[in-house]
Image (cartoon, rainbow, N blue to C red; front, side, top):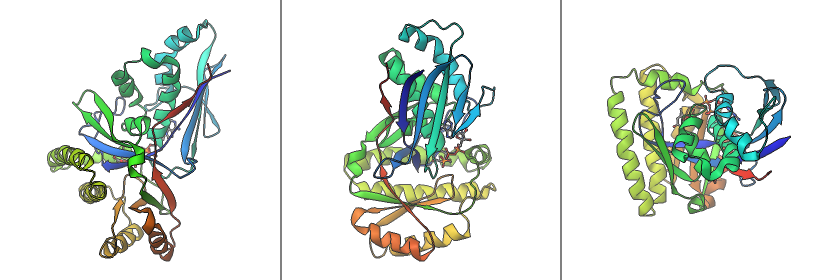
Length: 323
Ligand code: ADP
Ligand code: 3S4
């Protein structure tokens, strides 16, 4: 019996996150920012539902999974909130378990955020105002350190005190209606984000990185206040460049030769019209441009044998009431 369902959209870092407290709680070690994205039809998404069954189980991308103690397990969150959900639904918990089914569709990167956010939205749709949202976000963080980006949507900032991190939307998604992101995938398997988190902290420049990220967040908020939208993505490009040179210095290389030569094309094109690029933890180059220039960006990508997805900044997670 299904009790809730939701969709959430994956994310792209704007001020990229590198470094988390530990693999279980995944508290960010510095402030960061990001956006949720999808395509025009919102088909790029995670779709998740919760249902009640006589055995504890779940399905992830069509494959049956059973609970284990592995870190990032969605079952940990379900187990924590299960009793309250049965109470709220007025159901006896005996011999019943809350199970989950989740499917990712067309995601380039940032799937763990939409996975955690979609699960969170399913629970939120049942418990609503009973939840302490700060505590809840930090519980969801055990699945993904930047879950707030997808849960709240638009352009978000996540601030941390090292023990807890809280996300807020600083510009809602319609603010960016004039922009399109050409999501350009490169055919190489990605490294898990944990490879970045574990290694970046080894750099002697990591302390500087923490300060720079914090300063960029303050600057970003000023840009939002002044409506300087292109500058937000220029700041993101600058952050991408710093971040990848730092992780490369500790042996984590995401930007391969083909990505680098495409990036050079993008940088050259900036002399002709405005555009900007971002690379997060996956082997994708996200090129941000005005809608009117998308055709030209698609031509540049096509000339490099890349098949971009046309992406828009999207809203936060949404639930479909079932109860
Ligand atoms: P990404 O950029 O896609 O988030 P990460 O390496 O940060 O890449 O995270 C990948 C991990 O996210 C997967 O191994 C899986 O544990 C988790 N994940 C992805 N999608 C979902 C989902 N729909 N529900 C729960 N967890 C998910
Ligand atoms: C590595 O939690 P990704 C990074 O801030 C981790 O987007 C995010 O991205 C960097 O693995 C970032 O989700 O692509």
